[in-house]
Length: 202
Image (cartoon, helix red, strand yellow):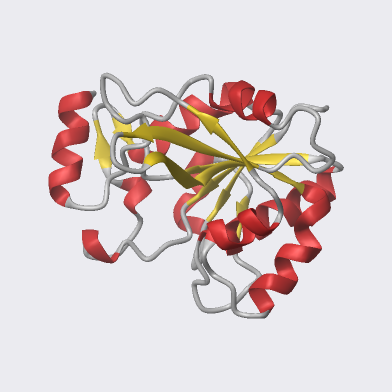
């Protein structure tokens, strides 16, 4: 399989941070987004950012900006679809997504997702971590997504589906399990308190 393209999902409303672009919040010497780019870019064949609204606010990062094609902030799946449509134009077979507010995700995310999807006709894999109460917790903004399923995803979104795992379960998605020690690598910044914690982890 060809190396996947990468898509950073930043299409949300960031209501718990008071609105605006969470990815542009400062973290260390950069921003949340710059940390995500630095972590994902070496793992993929090319990179784009899914974001809605005025694309010029991201001009400084030099990536293609992909807006949702489904109106009304339809959630992460709309960003995945935008990424899959972009990847289809590039002739790619798969994309890997990462959230713009999760600066510490695994540096080996892509190889582990690819390994978990090995042998699947249409490799569809979500990242997961162990949980003492629930067994595994899936992280639906971190996944390997096949371009071949983009029309099915568009139909599901047009039909009102918004929950990621409802669609991925329907497609027989697998999980790629990542360790959650010494802290959860999929810790994401939702509140000002989370941002302070991220600074401490950095």
